[in-house]
View 1 (cartoon, one colour):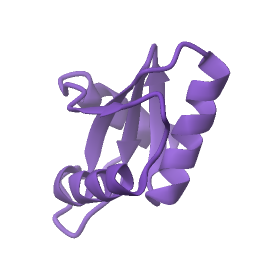
View 2: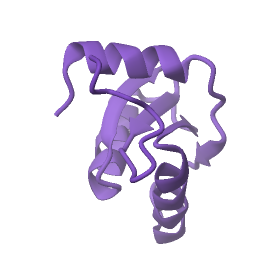
View 3: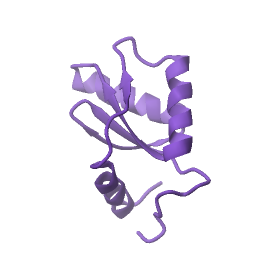
View 4: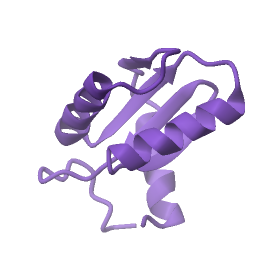
Length: 97
């Protein structure tokens, strides 16, 4: 589990990222989960744009995506979900926070 300072640091780092992945209206598929797994392994911190209008549905999708990809839900802003999962490369040094 991450501390509030670590989450704050990740949110600040995510500001410069663009949402490179798009979650369609059909929801999570096996191929999408494989794509997200590879992206998290390579980048640690990613943004996903969801095509849903319902905030409750978006929250459930984000939590489901985080649990299935073994990632941490950093934030949801509008329709953009930010996920973090540490990799062996350790691109973000969270030990200072």
